Image 1 (cartoon, rainbow, N blue to C red):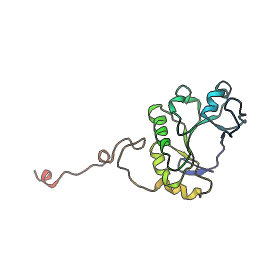
Image 2 (cartoon, rainbow, N blue to C red; image 1 turned 30 degrees about the vertical axis):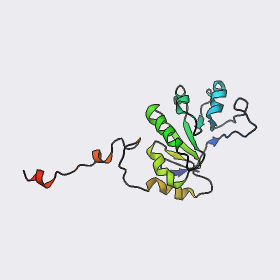
Image 3 (tube, rainbow, N blue to C red; image 1 turned 90 degrees about the vertical axis):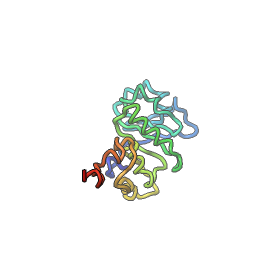
Image 4 (cartoon, one colour; image 1 turned 60 degrees about the horizontal axis):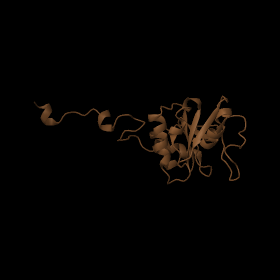
Length: 175
């Protein structure tokens, strides 16, 4: 199960993670909906690009620009959070959405916790695979922890002071 578009849904994608003894060039990529590491995509691009449903995931130390030429090919792009305190995935997501114009599913995977979801959606994530040792229903609540945001991001495009109509001061109204 994952959270997608603020609902809990069945996950029909498999995330491929390389084992220590596997090489990106030779690892077998099973049939079906699969999200491969960027290194596997780069090593097996000629074969994988012929597949209808293929996704790719980026490690926190990889650059989203590596997908610039192929970005429209992917139904889903995932960003891995190797640990709770590694925030580089936020920048990767923002750059995928804003600079590279990615419009497909953007999924957070790895050490994804409830406390992060609200902020992750602000930079463009619309799907989340919370850690399996946590209740997904609790994680879903994290998307609505706050009712308003002050600063701009991928959502909303305007800061709060530009979204709120304020009445003039008493001195202005009496003139």
